[in-house]
Each structure stands twice: as structure tokens, then as C-alpha cells.
Amino acid sequence: AASDVYKRQLFDQFDEITLTYLGNPYIINDLIVPESKTLIIESKTAIRIKKQGEIQINGTLLAEAKKETDEKIVFTSFFDEDYDGEGIEGNATNYWNKIYFSPSSMDSKMENVLMRYTKNGFEAEKSSLEFKNSIIEDFDGDAIKLTDSFSPIEKITVQNGKGRAVVINGGEPIVRESVFRNITSGQYVGTGMYIGSESKAQITDNYFEKIFRAFEANPLLGIASGYVFEEGMSLIDHN
Image (cartoon, rainbow, N blue to C red):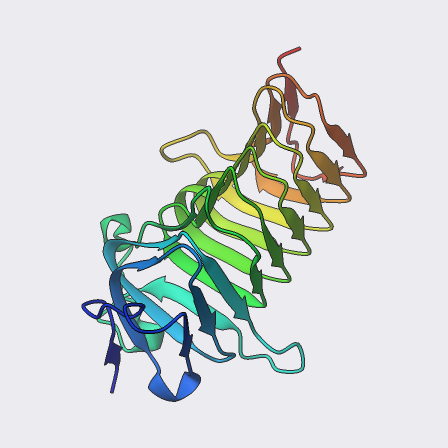
């Protein structure tokens, strides 16, 4: 049976909470991890998030699946039929919103994670986290949004969504050795990577396929090298 955790005040008495795979799948509406508190999620754990629901990290999130297993940590819609839901039926209004890392969050890590049926994936605002070896798919907005962040983003795949794969404003994040593909227009023009003003982002060795617009930079102040364009995509630089 699913573990319904969204009504509980999980961190009232504990500094650290662990969601184990034995409680699969967990159901969340909105969840806040307070400052100086830690949420740990074990390998093979599935989190079903209700319509427009959001996880806010003011403290620390450690979602690191073991590398030796194919069982990723999953963040998905409450309606995902692969995890006991009733089915998405192509309706983006049934998607969950995002994981938001606030300015007070610190030392968060997500590795070997699958995020699907999400409006906006995750957002880091004036904070940084490690995001590696993970997949974001079936999104409808901004899959990753980094504002004044120094987050390292490595060896990820963003695919089969509508909108923008990565949005960078300010900061000096690193995006390397990642794949962006099959992204169409929705709320935003289908874009692999949007780099806003005054960012010193380092963008290296990434692969873009079947996206209307690979890069849009305004202006491109960071380092962009080693990228591969497929399917007639374009680089737009507003310098």
C-alpha cells in the first residue's frame, strides 16, 4: 500500500528523515524540508506527487540511488500508471510542479534520479546542488532553472518535453556531458539551453537532438564548447 506522507509534519521531532523503498510508493501533496533539516531518499524509492504539488528544500535533500542498481529514485505524478496511478492520459494539468531549492538550502545531491510528468523539474535559487546521472522527461515548462547558482549538472538526459530544458540566470553553474532531445514548444519555444544575462556558466560537451532551438543566450557570457547540434538546430546569441 502507498504511504501517504503529505499531511504529516515530518520534521517536528527529527532533524533527519529517511524514506525507504519498503514504504513504496510515497504520496505527497506539498512537502517542506525546513532549514537545517535533511530528507534522505533511498534507492528504488518512488515519490508520487499530487496535481501541482511541490517539494521545497530549505535544508538538505539527499536523493542518491546506488550506482550498482538500475532502480533509480523516482519523482513522478500521482497519476503515473507505472506507479499505481490512474493514468496521465496526456493531460499536463495532472503534472506535479517542481522541487524548489531555496536560498537557505545547502549540500543537496540528486544522483541516479528519474523525474517525470513534471511542470518544471527543479529550481535552485541562490543555492547550489549536485545533479548527476539522472533523467528528466515529459516536462511542460522549465525542466531545470538555475538562478545565481553554482550547481554542477553532469551526465544527465532531458527529453520528451515541452519548453526549455535548462534556464540559467546569473551564477556560474557547470553543465557538461549531457543529452537534450525531443523538446518541442509549449509555454516557451522549445529550447535546449537558455542563458540569461550576466551568467558565467560553463557549458561543455553536450549533445542536442530534435530541438527547435539548441541555445539562446542573452548575451552568452559563459563558456560554451564541444556541443553537437543535430536535426538543423540553431544557436541564437543576442550579443
